[in-house]
Image (cartoon, rainbow, N blue to C red):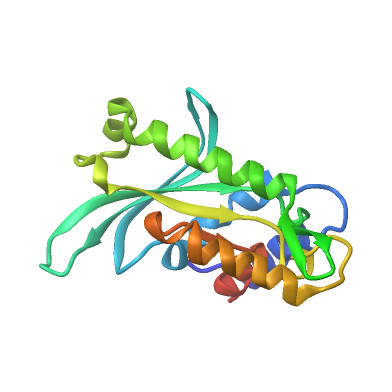
Length: 190
């Protein structure tokens, strides 16, 4: 799905908004980034937003039929937690070390809880048309922008290291991804 130039400009304006958090407004554009958010060659793509569960509301779920290596289609769902493009990912702790911001940690925590709830919820699987609970996946966290990688600027290489360390040691098992809103914007640019 492609955005028109005008739609993309509206999306970009939401991302570039300097103060007001625009998470909910940006959420609507994510369906256009299905090719980035889903593996393989997805078809029959559907999205759900603000899906109510025991722990709160899952921000964004994208489900699709995905062709596997044996040429079989099966339904998969990927769960994403969103934070506004105006949020920062890291803040400085020492001259050479950064830590996740409260927003980033909250997003990781929410994502883990929402995923755990979805995997064990038969009604969720029924609504998403998922037969096998192994076909429910952690998608990731979408937060901030490259320009908001580190609150207050400073040692950007330290912030990149902080993200790389999390990606290396915390995320591989479930293939959790961290994407920035400008990455989404670049993908859907007409």
